[in-house]
Image (cartoon, rainbow, N blue to C red; front, side):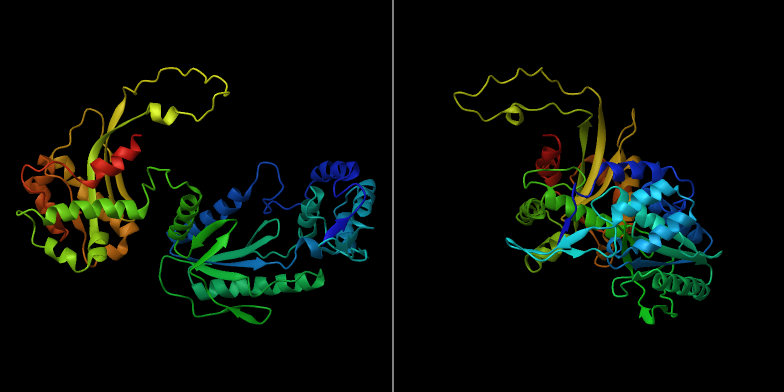
Length: 448
């Protein structure tokens, strides 16, 4: 569909009206974060998360409903928006300018090279304009509120939520507010998509409320996770879903040869190097008794392995000659002269543990400190906590620990600590080189 208007969606009058309407006091309520100076979608997310966290501290449940408005910008009633601007005491000259901006707009449908007959636009505000979003915010500025619930709006994203220690009472409060919102939407010619609207109960408990929340007579199922303003929020605010989606998007946009410290390297490469190390241990005589089981269930065995080591990490890594090479031809301009780079003299000792799915734990050694058995014994405790947060499915079968035979790693205190966690340890044969995957794979790509 093509919108036809001489001069396009933006005219000098509409741009001037945008600046003037921004200066009208109390036209847009404070709970609307969109299109207000100093406010953004981040503030709306922080308001919701803060209210939910306060509820967690008080052992309360926060019930929230996310409404999906059908064709929000295209459904604004022209007469209704003019009426609300008059009620907000907007100057008459500005109202006439906005009315001229909205009226006498035409549209047609384009199919290949053919255009349909032009029809008059009966409602809606232009989405591609600067003034349109402000008019929609002004149109929804009088959404009904209650004393026990809160509204959070960002353009057409509408959210209502409340907090109470009794989940059923919280649902009842929100249900009364939803009825008021339904009446308002019907009165002002807006529609809500009940199929896309979602409801969630934020609580530290795993129980799902038995009372259903209805929207236009349709019972909504409580979701484990919802997407609000581009962020995935789970019912316990653990952020696992949001982190997983962000990581997946980042990996999808990365080139195949790009390496990031937090994401490490492609899964097939990591599995390959762990596979090489385990096969080397299988061929040695002095090997722990659990290694022969590797041949039967190779994938499951590799997924249980947690490996790691220590390495020096510099603050600045100089660019290598290979990285600075440029393609060119005989007529290419002269390459710019680059200053000589040296390695940073400041460095830190980092302890990194990872598995076939990615990084599990990164620890930095304090300055003027040494990694000994006493210091290293704290690492398995922190690693176990990281596995509980990131690889909970690894707790039942138990992790298989793979590290080299340095003195802190083979000390009696370290072995006792690993036995407390019921972790199996793949021992390195005596006098063998440190051929752990971290040295010849992970650290090598981190430092280049």
